[in-house]
Image (cartoon, rainbow, N blue to C red; front, top):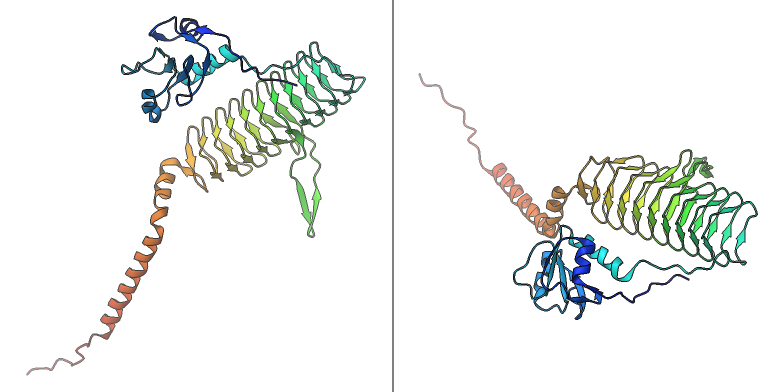
Length: 364
């Protein structure tokens, strides 16, 4: 099986600065043995600071060096000042630890591979994986135990399919795609025609296209289209337990956080971000660079660059004002009732006032 090697390669701060760029403030020969958060770092670790709310931890951290976005005069350790500290820290993690290593097993004799399946060079097909007829798998791919690759599936180079994942027939998977365990690509869309109280299944004749450099989290499901393909755009990342409905089109470089559900035939532009547990109804469009806050329910189109929140989702500033009022709603309700009671008393008092009914007399 694959493994994460937690051992690190010892580096100097100078070597790290050369790797990520930026301005080095402090001893360039500082030895870096690992990486950690500010609160958990030990001597020899490098850490980073992005969020200002953690600034106070600079006083107590044991880190030997910090990656920051600006020079901090009061810092007690060497600094590496870069434009994007979080990205630089991720580069340092790769430098020190590398990516996940995949065991070289070749083509297991216990895998079920159709005679006409085409498997590229340097592929690792593990025990009990199934590769159906007409499948084409590119170079350097890994298919873990009990994964199923359906008929006519095409898989690009350097793609990783983890244990128990399923790719249904006629789906197309791009290069450098990562499909985590127990996920499903190409299952039937939720399509039924109700006639006389009976739900009749609609054949789902479309497929799924997963473009290059996409990552699909564990236990996620991407439905095939009813008539046209479901598309996951290049570089998009889907978290765990995400469901993408039939015929949906996700643009390039979107971030779909865990437990998001997107109904059929929705369209997302490029670089959209959907927070955890967001729900999106079908047949609507989200523009480019749209951000949806966690647990929001999106029921209408969203224009480019908008940030929305709430259920139903509205502009973020409007949502903040609305949600800020929630704790006061019981008191507001009571105040309204009190005002209504006062108005009723005033109205009753006005009705009870005597009126002068005498007619004016003519004076001659």
